[in-house]
Amino acid sequence: MLASTSSVVVFTPIAFMSGVIGRIFLQFGLTVVYATMFSLVVSFTLVPMLAARMIRPGQGVGHGEGLGARLARGWNRAYDGLAAACGRSLAWSLDRKWVPLAVTSLVLVGSLMLFRFVGGEFIPTTDPGPVQELIGHPRARACPVPARWPTAWHIPLPAPTPRWKA
Image (cartoon, rainbow, N blue to C red; front, side, top):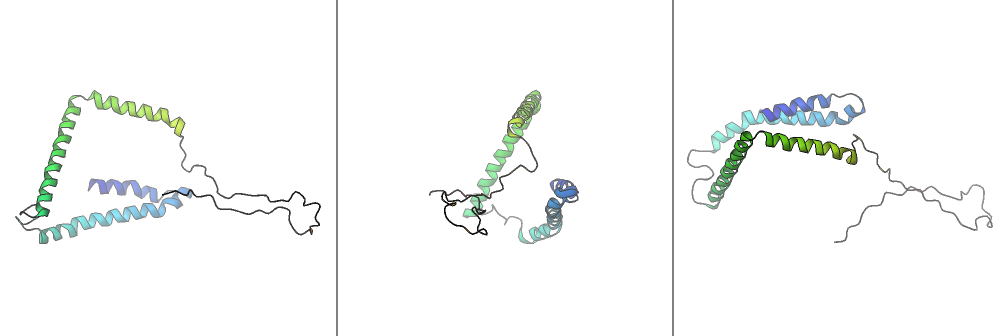
């Protein structure tokens, strides 16, 4: 519920930003908010009802001797091992509070130092894509050309696309 609430709190202001950026992100922000709220309603109403009707005590996934039950038990053992490793890691970090703080500070300082090489713009400059080719003939003056014919044409070409060899 906390993740859903934080998504709604973050994306609601994005939906109502002003200017060009607001027009760009209006649909995106509202879509995320509505989808999150609908998911929250379904998770509180429909999912518990379906779980109560479908799962019987002693007959759920992981009970019995079939392939699905063995896979579910193996998954649960792996997940329990992962949870235990995370608990040990958290205990180690809480016993040595300066280590996570130092690592986080180094990552922050390093990212700030790299920022000048990477740069940062909200909308970066891009190549517009069209190419202009001027076509002319070296003996164009020797040939009689009507005045309404141009000696050069502006032909917009699409941007080249990479062709990958398989």
